[in-house]
Image (cartoon, rainbow over the protein chains, first blue to last red):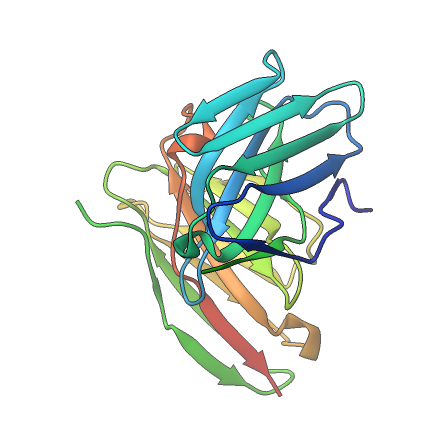
Length: 112
Length: 114
């Protein structure tokens, strides 16, 4: 039972353009969502989060949008840089819950 | 302030053996979670430890067990290894009561079961 889904295994974007990574969830109890970035041989690192009381959160080049009615969130990276090339994981939780539920990840390649 | 460290980096075991993986939490973090990341999948929650007690468990059989020590370091033990246990094992630490924004992952231990 995949409660968090990232349906695009990979995405290729030209440097300077926008990268949009998508994530869907099925469990309506989730109220806190995070995006992680993972390089090879490293653990996931926290990128940005959003609470269900918001529909948008920005941090520099990264913006996360949440559509609760559609149970969908997306991560926008503008402008994309070659150093953004990594695997991006969407994760969900109940606030102050004891676990994160991850999607399968999307490999982002930013071409220079 | 050191981050989350894990040992060993890689190891190879055979089916039926037992393995112990280790994790040192970031300084001041009293909660440790373990995740299994199989190839091509996202991390899956195994369990969480807080104050040396298991504080939540995912859908993993009892042969996956853990310990947390007074210094908040942790071990993951897996008995009777199966081929499907081959994965990257990640630990993550945070201070209880903080959000997951304040949780940090270690680099992982790559376990191969032959």
